[in-house]
Image 1 (cartoon, rainbow, N blue to C red):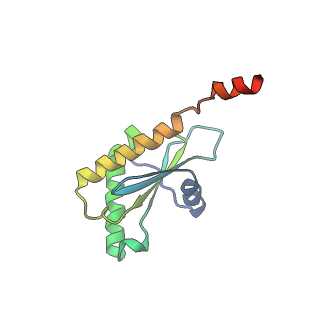
Image 2 (cartoon, rainbow, N blue to C red):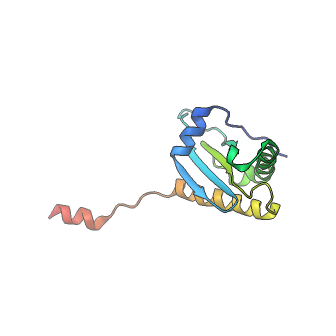
Image 3 (cartoon, rainbow, N blue to C red):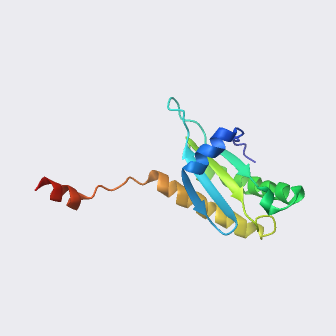
Length: 131
């Protein structure tokens, strides 16, 4: 059982919401780079379940299930210096656990790939401008 830092401040949730977002059937994952530029910090994770999902017991179960999956995959898939926010969706509380786990793993892989890719410079456009 691994422990991971939790996002608790609203401004960090909002910053992650404005950055990269990946949507899957059972979960929505948002991520942003941390603001700290001095030292490498472990990834922080936040969990959200809105009132649209249902009553309190459904929202609580949704967040419990999200935390259980992240506890298993945090060490392998979370990149340092990144804030992740997992948002529960309508079926998160009742879907099979393996489906939820696979969706979250795919979401982490996809969003990490977006953070590690370097934007390509289009040489054709720069060649046209030089003429």
